[in-house]
Length: 236
Image 1 (cartoon, rainbow, N blue to C red):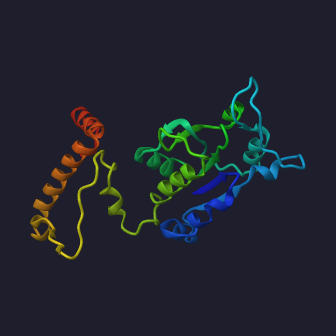
Image 2: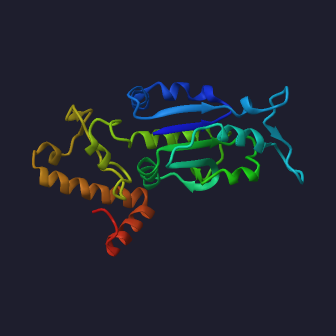
Image 3: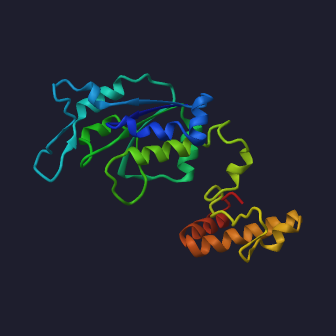
């Protein structure tokens, strides 16, 4: 999969792209990431990418010309999505990441800054995506989250495919508690059922824990999961 990140701060991606599973995936060419700086497409000596909003107001807006030129300089693959990272977009969740990882060969991700982008930039955009109901200084951190979440779902990134299925949100519930050695750490013991070797009982315990944990931490998710189960549309 090809990622084209339109950003005023390409250096901010250096560490992210070179470490962990994401770095390994890029080294194995499971995905490729290209960073495009709108400043490289400005035509004035100051390389200006922002200006005052018409009608007045606080702050500056990113100008449309450098963003359009950045995106239009890119190759176009058959299955392409142009995403604007924006607090006004749909919130990133696991189904969205799965959709992007499955249905597209190219994701162009535009990182906004200042007070946002000129509204006409939306003529380029096919989807607006948000990290959540809060404001950051720019779209780079949300873009990194999107990039990481999509790449880890691509075949070959994670060694054990089964591990992707047994995670929070994959089946609508939060993950169950997990433990490793030692069996007794400072008086906190691993539940006996996990030491029993009885896989049926372990699976039953884990499912019960998922229900309890989701009920206490994310009752909204549990309600949605129960509704989908009643309608026969959920994965269970």
